[in-house]
Amino acid sequence: MRLDPIDRLEAARYMGIKGAPDPQISAILEQCENLLINSVNPKYVYRSAAVSLSENGVQLDGLDVPLTGEDIRRHLEGCSTAVVLGATLTAEADKLIRRSSSVSASEGLAMDCLCSAAIEQVCNRAEEEIFADDNSFRTWRFSPGYGDLPIDLQPDILNFLNAQRRIGLTVNGSGMLVPSKSVTAIIGVSETSRERGKRGCEICSMRGRCGLSRLGGCGKNK
Image (cartoon, rainbow, N blue to C red):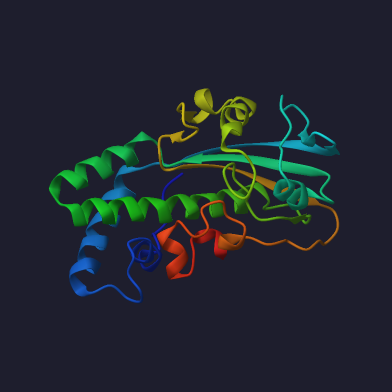
C-alpha cells in the first residue's frame, strides 16, 4: 500500500495548532510529508470472527481470551461478527521520526504528527478495501486501551492476527505497539442498522489528561 496525501491540517492540529499553520510550519509539514510518502509503505492485516456475549465478556471466535469491559460490550451489541484490524506504517516511520528529530525539534514534531494522521488514514483506507463489496452495517474502530477495554489485550490480538509474521507488528511489555505508528482495532458488523454509539473524548481513558481534548479531540472524535 502507498500512502495517500496526508491531511496536513490534521497533523498541525496534533501539533497543538489551532486553525491553519503559519508559512514556516506549513513548509516544514510539506517537506516532511513528501519524505514520509516516498519512504513508507504501510501494511495491514485483518481477520473476521463470530461474536458472542457471555458473563466473562465478549468472545470472538478464535481469540483465546474474552474482550472485557462494558464499552466493548456496548460497541459490539447486536453484531454477529467483528473484523479485527492491525495496521502499521512500519519501522521506517519510526526511523524518519528519529532522523527528523535530530535535525530540529520542530521537524521531529511535524514528522511525528504527520505519521499519526497518516496511520488513521491508512486505517480508513483499509476499512474501505475490506468492506468494499459488503452492504452490512458496521461500527467505528475500537482499540485496546480505549474506554475500559484493557490495553493488555494487545498480545492476544496480535497473535490472533498473526501480525508479527504478516506485517512485522509486535508489542512491548507496556502494551505499546511496535512500530509505534501502528493501530489494532475491532469493528463490529451487523446485518441491521444500529446506533454507532459514543466515541471520542467522552469515553476515552485519557479524558482530561490529553492535550488534544482542548483542540477538539483526536481522530476518534470524527
